Amino acid sequence: MEPQKLRVKLGELASTSISGNDISSSCLYVSALAVLHAGQYAWISLLIVGVVLFLFRKIYGEVVGALPMNGGAYNALLNTTSKGMASLAASLTLLSYMATAVISANEAMAYLGTLVPQLPIILATIVLLAIFMGLVIIGIGESSKVAIAIFIFHLSSLILLSSFAGMYLFEHGLKVFTDNNALPVKHGALPMALFFGFSAAMLGISGFESSANFVEEQKKGVFPKTLRNMWVVVTIFNPLIAFLALAVLPISEIEHNREALLSIMGNQASGPWLSTLVSVDAVLVLSGAVLTSFVGVSGLVERITLDRILPPFLLKRNKKGSTYRIAIFFFLLCVSILLITEGNLEALAGVYTIAFLSVMALFGIGNILLKVRRKNLPRPERSGWLSLLVAIVAVIVALAGNIILNPDYLAVFMEYFIPTIAVVMVMLNRTALLKLLLRLIRYFLDPINRFLVRSYKGINQTINRINDQEFVYFTKKDDVALLNKVLLYIRNNEHTRKLKIVSVFPEGEQATKSFVADLDVLDREYPEIKIEYIQLHGKFTPQLIKKLSVEWNIPINFMFIGSPSDKFPYPLQELGGVRLII
Image (cartoon, rainbow, N blue to C red):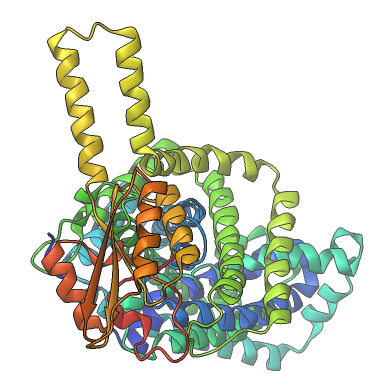
């Protein structure tokens, strides 16, 4: 078994900085995107995005508060629906992180290229990705220090830019803003301008999901504070910068310089020094977004690997407790994508857009399932049904708007999504595929051939090794119908043929004879799963779970319970990763 992970618990500033660098880097491009599609009403579109993000604060707060484990949307769906559905969310999140890392690293080096002439952008991008891979391998504690420094510098730069743009507005008046407002409305009508502006502006909240993917590394009570802090930053700065841009620069100039809008604003408001400062800030905060991707993907991949969706060799740790192989493979994936596209990353923007918005929608769906299927599970806060439905509809509207604006994005997204989900589906159905391979060997090849016999035996051994992983279900109810649902779930979602059903009774109590007899019936109904019933005496506690995990050599994430009520004495995170399946 792997050594226990050396968790470094992060405080509010560190956690906010890791996620905040990603979401706050959006101000470098989202204002220009909103102006491109909403014109003079861009700042209104960005305010609407702030309202939608406010609704998602409660959604994320409820889901992660009830299920405080790494994995984000994957974790939400894993504990409320099937493993296949959860794997869909995991695949989309991985694509989102991959696109974020490559685009952010490349854009950071493009900004650096304006300060350092003749900079080889592709090589510099690879070096930047390697640096942050190294930081994550060293440990999340060291990574957070870098993230904090970048985040504070970025906020300071935004405040400085906004202040000088405000002074410029005070000195020169509203002539530019008035001229911009006199221009024809984009797309011919205000509702359409706001619709497409909102759709484009929703990219300004990418990164909001990152905090949920490393929640186990955060101190108690920090997660909801990171959501609040990210919402404040986005809701203040994105509309403000769009408004100031429209007051300082003509729309035509904003559209022409959309890739370096803030730098042009700085030059207009106060001169070359502010423009240079903004460019340096862009390099740093976009680099911070790369770090966010590495940290987020490490937490997510570790979680789905523990659930046997990806190969277990990824869980190997170094002396710092970091799963360094995940960071290395993510680095190699990002570099391969960069070299394949030769630095022309417009296509990746489509992957990024659709994947990110799909993950947001799936998180909302996970919240619905949590309310319906886990209604008794304790949680620190709850989202209202109306706000939940409005938030999901808003994300779907934004997704539709982006596909209408860029129909080619959908085709590019499928080129990346199909291979990703195919790998995951192979892992989820590997025993069935191996059995199919056995049938093909039997049918097409001579069974006497020694090589084929060895292959046959080897595949059989692999199937047996996978299915030998034992699972545990803790139950306190003499309810055979409930146990039937448990067995159906395990048969349809897990690779195993051994299940321990465990009841923990107070001293002097035991299971009824009728319940034991019913278990024998279930054992016959599911011949592919060997059921062992165990009665223990004592209290059901986190310590008991850990003790049984060590004694039986069964990882805790292969242990299941039903959804506990609000009277359950322990927070779910104290159970060490026990999963909810009923």
